Amino acid sequence: MSEQLETLCIDPTGDCAGSVIWLHGLGADAHDFEPVVEMLDLHRPLRFVFPNAPVRPVTINAGAEMRAWYDANPNDPSGGHDDIASSVKAVGDLVRAEQARGVGADRIALAGFSQGGVIALELGLGFEERLAGIMALSTYVHDHERLMERVGFANIDAPIFLAHGLHDPMIPITRAITSRETLLGLNYQVEWHEYAMGHQVCPEEISDIARWLNGVFSGGS
Image 1 (cartoon, rainbow, N blue to C red):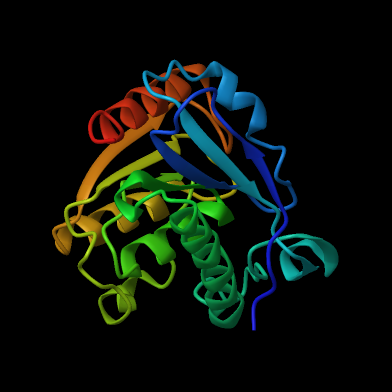
Image 2 (image 1 turned 90 degrees about the horizontal axis):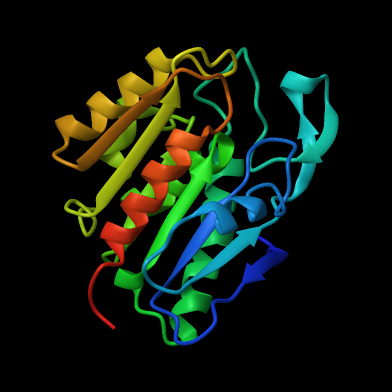
């Protein structure tokens, strides 16, 4: 059973046009992408929800405990199923909490960096209602060879923003490209970006994220 996640929330002034649930990467926390919000040139007021991942031992870091959405084991790159399923359920509860606030699923976007992107994709691709979109940064699709067994198609036409650094030493861009091709092969709507950077974000990417969010939340109430 997943526990309720701690969250940092940034509410807009005025009426909320939608919500973005944004998941941090391995070893970071809910504050990691908080500064990015002020850098986004947004046309409509959005609520940002930044959850904290649970603290757990991480194999790739010699068993040290840190915030992680799942255990990362370099000897089992497609493992972590139980941790991922638990995190997907916990973040799904956050989506339902936003719905309970009166925000429709089609006005909720999922976003994540690295491990957070894995969870955002896993949840979004299998979510039973149409979401506003999925933003996955410097990440990959978990167990892509069996993705077809896990997805639903409520979000087959939802916009998906995939971005990756050409020089990422943590998650090679080839893994992200494989994920992109898997999604395209299932007819998902993927917008792909690559940048001359490592495992990080850059100003050009932030501009592209703002443009994508403005498109995702361009209409409706």
